[in-house]
Length: 245
Image 1: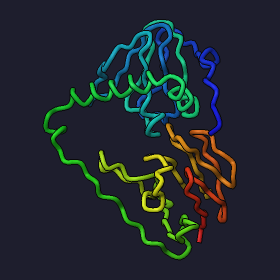
Image 2: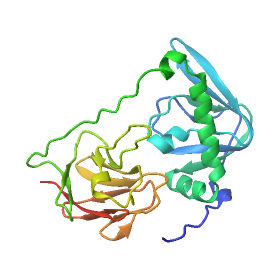
Image 3: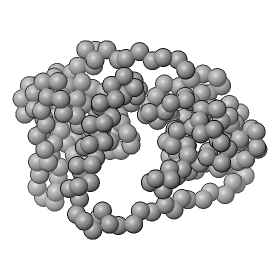
Image 4: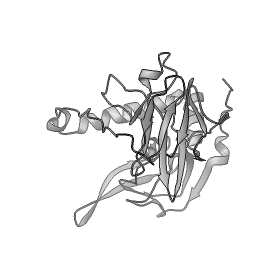
């Protein structure tokens, strides 16, 4: 597999004055931040008032949910002092964790801390493993597995996750390639297919090991690549064709 050079972090530094808003609650998010210098407060709206959730300092990070889950911001971030922040998008984050696994370990520790802080009744709630089932309908988009001729229907109204079921968490993507990937070359959360403004797009997710390809071209992590009916897609060693009807 092609080696990926480590990102030059100096090129990612963004300066903010004291009192600047880095992002606001509800904003769409595509990047995270690591504090190089200064302090940042994280605040959220709770009913009629604003609540401070945390004060972060050098070496801390925030906004990671936008990189990992493509979710709107759940809180606002403001600078308490002049700050130097590293702005990291999905592609850069993917390279960063390959060359600096400590970042991924620290995120896991942060997640564990958040889980320990949850009320016991939430921790004891049973996980849902139900997966929606889509029937292939004429005119609807689908992926065709070339070797077995298996069809995987797609939903224009949703983001169609592609990967393999995770037996530990019980989570399964809408397009579960596990049955056609005996060598396990696809990642648990490998890629996403979505329909926007009349066009289908394919995006590789963070942490994929064996690559995502469109007509032989490897995608960069986080890149939303337009695809058309008849395109050949490959996830690891699993080859499929994309069709719109």
